[in-house]
Amino acid sequence: MRIAIASDHAAIALKSALVEHLHSCGHNVTDLGPHDDASVDYPDYGYKLAEAIAGGDAQFGVALCGSGIGISIAVNRHPACRAALVSEPLSAKLAREHNDANVVAMGARLTGIDMAKACLDAFLSTPFAGDRHARRVGKLSNPAFTKDPL
Image 1 (spheres, rainbow, N blue to C red):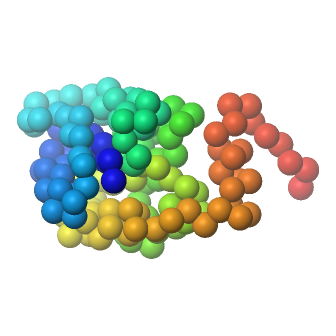
Image 2: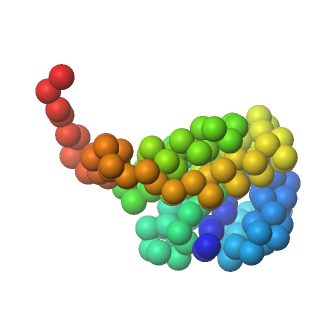
């Protein structure tokens, strides 16, 4: 698989460990930076990751920052991206299975390396279930909010 990964300065160590893990699994990985721990702004790297996904340069993305929250918000600004913030493998699996997430986000200050690897493995090995979920996912990518009567 072609996977793009980006972080902020708080997640450099986690990003490095996940890049190594992805390579060991045989994936083609593009590290969008940063490449040192100098302070950076997570939106800049979230937007770079979103562009890689939207442009077809990567099938999936990995977004990392201190909490995972900020960078996931930045990635989700792009209508082609569905980033899911996860902290354990079940949420990573459900993000793919039910929501067809194409970016997994994690927080380096909240998720250890082994747990992050387990989340990533669950995310990448789970197919989208389609069926009733496809209608819902379609609404996520619609630029105009869709209102259904309750």
